[in-house]
Length: 130
Image 1 (cartoon, rainbow, N blue to C red):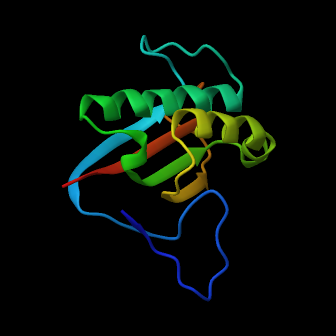
Image 2 (tube, rainbow, N blue to C red):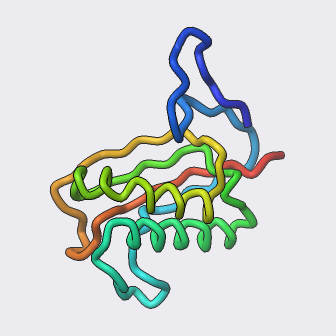
């Protein structure tokens, strides 16, 4: 995996502008903050992000992929202010579950998600190297 960073651009914090990778691709559907039984344990943004990331890791494991194989993440959040306020907790969960590497990332505020209690949904693309 190679991070794509134009030399004259400022370095983004917590993500990469682009990633180039070769290998077997793994696509993870949008994961939300419910547990393996489809139950929400919290209505807190940080806790739902932690659970959604846990769910991402569980699906990656099914493919023999690891968090460091993630090349792209798209985050859908229902409340930008709650998301920004939860940065410290989100950052901690991200470092613990995903690591400190940089994937190409996008975060989008949406009006709602299909599951009424869901505050965040995270889609992932990973590439297991050849």
